[in-house]
Image (tube, rainbow, N blue to C red; front, side):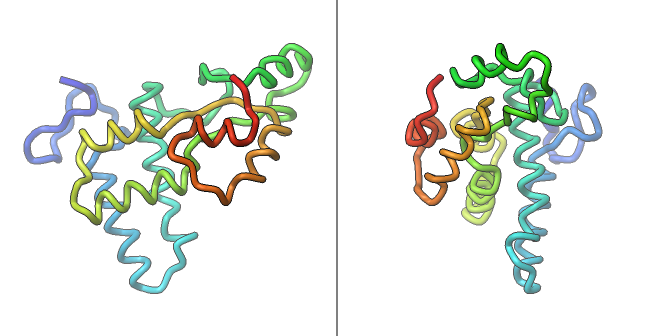
Length: 170
């Protein structure tokens, strides 16, 4: 049994699962919560934050296998410029010249999950496939991040297309 598998009643956790492992039950609860907050007049900007956090961490569990604060060394995908900057800046902390970049912005990723919940197709299989397809994280330079901001209003089907539009090479 996978550590992410649940028993039939969707509440009994696999024995290896941490209490903080994010499950489909948690995602569905936070989707309903967001819907209720929006109906009560809260802005999307506030209402979606828990959903962003939980969907991102669910994906991180699936792809990386652990929940920890983002750190560049956790990710295998580094831009060519980020790799060069790492060599050139050995005495500096990563945050001074690099950033961890979500190819599908976390808000967009969460909105897609919310839509799946609203369409009643949010299942573990759907979510795992969604994570595999769209949860791509790369390490890029601050300059590359500025270029991404210039294409932020455009819509891309994949993280790779978004990065290519900003001229980021891997």
